[in-house]
Image (tube, rainbow, N blue to C red; front, side):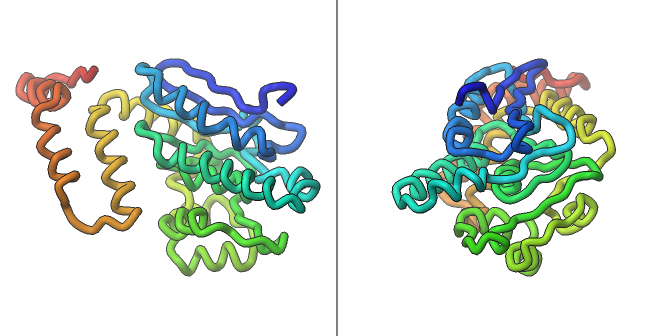
Length: 257
């Protein structure tokens, strides 16, 4: 990239991964897809970070999706197609598998590949002017199974079919009603602030283990096994449990490390 089209900014315990290609409405090209995993890893590695926020550096548009112009010019090459799909998948897996909470802050259009990134986040907050759509049907393409599962896990099969088969856009209010969006507010930034504050006051160990457990359930786990019970037992030996109990008995707020 001649100039960074992605930026990682950290302040007050919150890392922001900012899409910054305003001239293309934050359309994601190959270089951007490939850069995301390393930036997520960098955010997770910083001990002061408790929350990663995926957002746009420019108000009014989240992402128009994949860079269709690039795709049209290079998609005749099977090797490039394979590399492109691998990069998209790696970006989504990096967000979905991040050990710390990840929130998508959507203001404006969140379409195609941009929506796919938002689906991989733990929560999605949006402003009322936001719109959502997944549009392979408009291009004669097929949405991969992994991406489709992320959608079905959130909205169920009926709405997944409605979105994928028609390629139409829905507004933020409807996206919230069907579960695609966690919450809609005029000041979605304030929602992020509320979540960040709550996360900082809670146990990072509990958050990490809860994310891992939910991920296993979404991957098909149905009951406890040796791994889940080991995590359950391990928590009783950890410093967060000792601090949480001490704070409760002393009637004070816990101070987790």
